[in-house]
Image 1 (cartoon, rainbow, N blue to C red):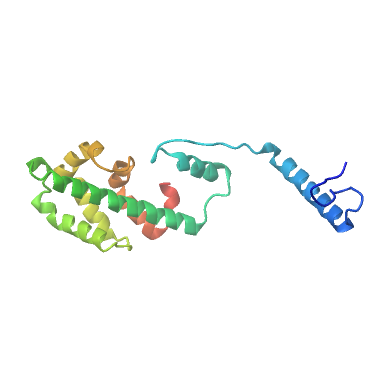
Image 2 (image 1 turned 60 degrees about the vertical axis):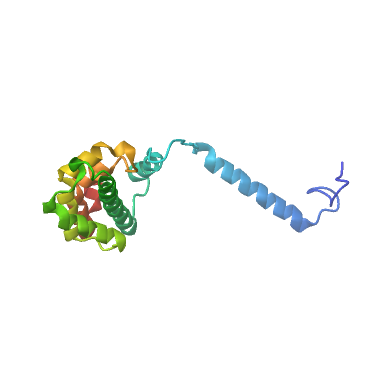
Length: 184
């Protein structure tokens, strides 16, 4: 039975040979793709932000895939370093909001570190230095920052902040030396 609303279908009387060949090629390609995809499993992960959805795929790629290139490791390192700087900055701004309570005033001995980090954030410092790691380390040990961290549910701070703030010297050293596989 013919198609009354359009040109004749493939294989019908009057179908040009090039259209029949094109149809055969498409059908063959579809069969090959179907055969190739028989072992593919699709997975949809749903979850809130920062819940680790993309981390699962990164781990699978690391364990079972092709791994990561040097450029991808370096980019990941800069992302970790940038997130660490943003985390300590968020802690400083949150502490500033509670300075009416002396438990949230950064100690005078760390005021230079506080200013250094705020300046680095303000000018969007992209070059990660040992000096920056030193100041982050000093601030992280300050009681005011620890008290602020205890109230982290009251402001935006990634769940991974503590891990990276405690390891910032190793993070920055690995970033500079390019040895990311030691911590990631």
